[in-house]
Image (cartoon, rainbow, N blue to C red; front, top):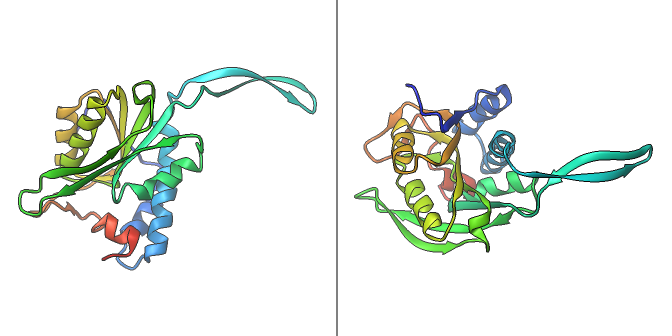
Amino acid sequence: MAYRENVTIYNHPLIQHKLSILRDVRTTDKQFRELVGEITMLMTFEATRDLPLEPVDVTTPMGIAHAHRLQGENLALVPILRAGIGMVDGILELIPAARVGHIGLYRDEETLEPHEYYCKLPVNIDHRLIIVLDPMLATGGSAVDAITLIKQHGGKKIKFMCIIAAPEGIEKLSAAHPDVDIYCAHVDEKLNDIGYIVPGLGDAGDRIFGTK
């Protein structure tokens, strides 16, 4: 299946290796949490490629180096509760100055439609690069609604990062928000009749927090 230009699918060997362990039913909750953070960290390199830099002179033991640093506090991370929280630390390890907001959505088990119950975003959201985080892009409903909500609060430059996606989710998100770049480690086969990704990895939130 061909995807739109706004979709980046990672084929890095380290990501694919860690993803194989992440999927495994024998992987412990602790290992699962660690792997989610590690995979997210590896994905962050590409997703933040366009962060703005500013020149800075640094005094080294040998003289003056003309270098670059990130320009101000321009990054906001917005995990979709609850599973998205598991991806935050992987990015903060690399960019500790990033601000973190939260969006809470729950899925109606009958209609599979998402419903909002919480939204708290960093200040000056309209001037930040926003990365929305959720390990799974399944039906796409939660991602679409979360990004719509961020735009209503003034967010303009938005990216979406997930670990595993279903083709249906990619298509729905791309159609609803064609201006949003999507980053995922793998695209799986399909959704089953209750909206779970196949073969997927089960319920990411349950496996992150040990509530399965």
